[in-house]
Length: 403
Figure 1: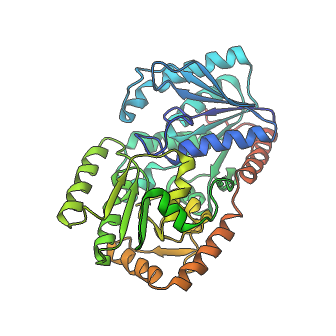
Figure 2: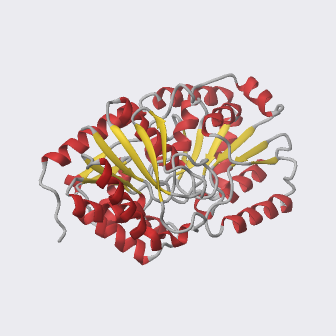
């Protein structure tokens, strides 16, 4: 395995996570490409040009090049990206014509999957797909997605030579909601950069952030209904502790992001928490470790998560997590050992578990140690090795033909 074409139409590894539509997938694509490059692969990462002044190519590091493909105006809402998939596909094909064919295509998210599906038929190389989120799973959890997206995901699944799942719950969802063939599903859990995310001195981290004594709760994620930031605010309110703080790191995302942020701010005011809730704009990924170390508990109340990088990074920093018992969070958080999973992700349920942690320093310390130890089993290098093996198995088989 030498050349990998990574498709990431709607989000770039060069963009700031936590802003706009950028999030965990940006980190995933960046770290995946770097880890594959460290194992000798040459990765060209194709993204849609999202700013007019971007160069056509950016050499991120040896073996990783980001290619900006013109597909519609730079400032284009995510909701309209489906209209430019054809242009993106043509741009990738033109680059491949000049650069030579890759050994494998790896599409990320359904939009890239649609492009990868056509490219596979045009050039005849295996197609690997990581969906990150699934329309039918989101709809079932209360975040309706279009039937167009769900149908497109099903079509891509029907022709993908290998489908990468981050964990067993995601593999089960692919089979349950889409009838995906288990023989073509490969598990490759994401990793964590342990040089950045590791246990550290809580007092020093709090001093760096200007925080004093008292419990500190942390929410990291885009401000959108899927992430349920209101649950984090209401959890703080239920603690009934004037010395507690909630840090919320992230910015509005999606069509209703700004509306969600306004509602969040209104609820903070209504609950009289203006002095206790600290809204933090999106931060560079590497700097999040300071926030994780400063916190007593990280809250992840999402309605659905295919994996949950925030929960893993928090664990790597030795911070217990209270999370919704959904999707990949059920794999990342070991209930009662590295954190708590709430079957009903209500503020009441979250507050109960937060109180249990901050009221028991010994339990908190034990969970911190167990969390950081368990996080050590996840690495981007290990993920890259699993991907290489999956690519090779796909290459050894006859390509799936959906025609």
